[in-house]
Image (cartoon, rainbow, N blue to C red; front, top):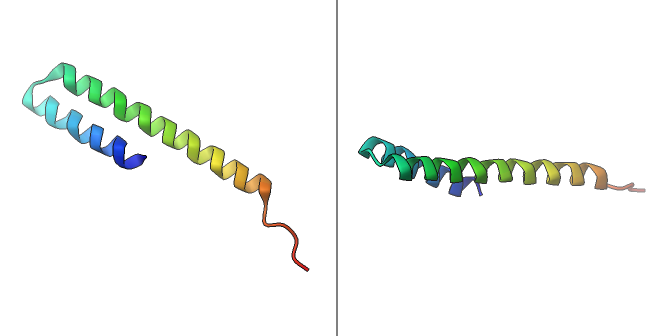
Length: 58
């Protein structure tokens, strides 16, 4: 998921350098949204893994 965020960020940077402000802004917003979703999913997975635990071994 971070790969897509990085791709959209690169597209935004290239569009900004070439002077396409609307495309750059839109691509940056998509990259930001995907990165936020990825971080939220990571935190949820981290919490769920912590709650699940390793169990007890005898």
